Image 1 (cartoon, one colour):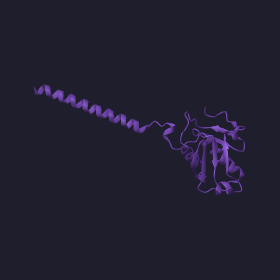
Image 2: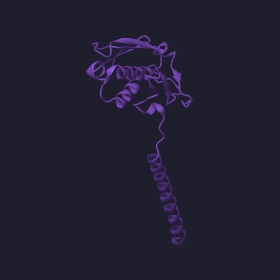
Image 3: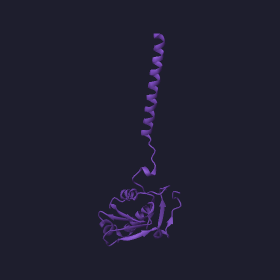
Image 4: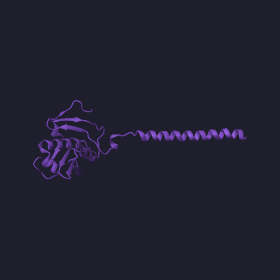
Amino acid sequence: MIKLLTPAACFVLLLGCNNEATEEKKAAEEAAAPVQQWFATDTIIAWDCNADDKQRKRIFNTSDSVPFAQAFINGINKTYGEIKMKLDHISADTLYVTFEKSDWLTDRAGNAGAAQYLSFATLNLLETKGIHYVTYVFTAGAHARPATWNRTDFNDWKTDSSSVQ
């Protein structure tokens, strides 16, 4: 009887250890290479642009509409660390943004720098689902003033042929 129980017990232990090792291996593989989808991040940039040449290049295609403007605001703030954009509110199809300190934009960036920043920001913010207008709320300065932008502001811009489709 003992001769029969010993191999059976070893077999059960072997199966138990093997299942744990397989589960541990699966967990380690998932942790090592997590699948990230666009909506799993809080920082997105879809467009790059050159306001001087009136050219834009899509660098990331949001296959679905992104419902949260904050992801684009985070991307803009990461790209332009000199100024921090903040979501003020959304009303119907208009996104309102403000800045913690607008003096970089209005007084130090120059005309070209302000145009570049506002174009870059607008192109990206307009990717937010349901947003057709972006209104910038800040005190006017030498190089920039508050305004509302929309997609028609970019009708005469060329889209770079190497843009992501």
